[in-house]
Image (cartoon, rainbow, N blue to C red; front, side, top):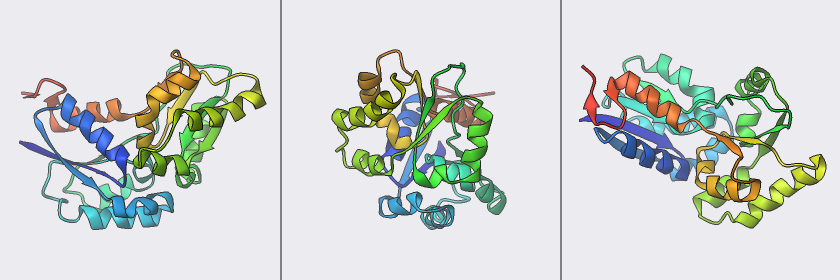
Length: 221
């Protein structure tokens, strides 16, 4: 059976691993969730990279694929790991790109660490649309602990509504933990809100790399 490690420092990794197991039953998912190092993924790329190296050492070269279920680590360190460990396959969650153009500012829910990277600045430039970056480091911990409420989400977006006299048409999620609050976002922003995240794209890339048909449990010939 194909072995895939899903690595993260918090609950977002569990969410992605759940989806991967559902979509690809042929894959044995190994969850490496480094809860003790969660704060290091909100600090800087060097700290996140070192935490990943320590946690993944037992698996590098012994599994078919390692997936970073962490946008910050993917943006800052995926190329490094591919160069450092050339005999190991790596994938990571990519920063999502919307498929439509709108006039209202797009909200990007992210962390301070990611927002301060060159990768994120380049990403904003390529999006070619008005962007409001919302750094929500506190939400990451609250989601991990199951304590983020709808009222907290509402209060954050109410600030935006008062400033712009409207709510955003689309939201981009760049922390895998935020996938857990998609229902709350729809409740606050309306059912027609467009929400972009990269888990489906990453699973599609997994299928291509491992040469399997997504969802069928069959290996490609």
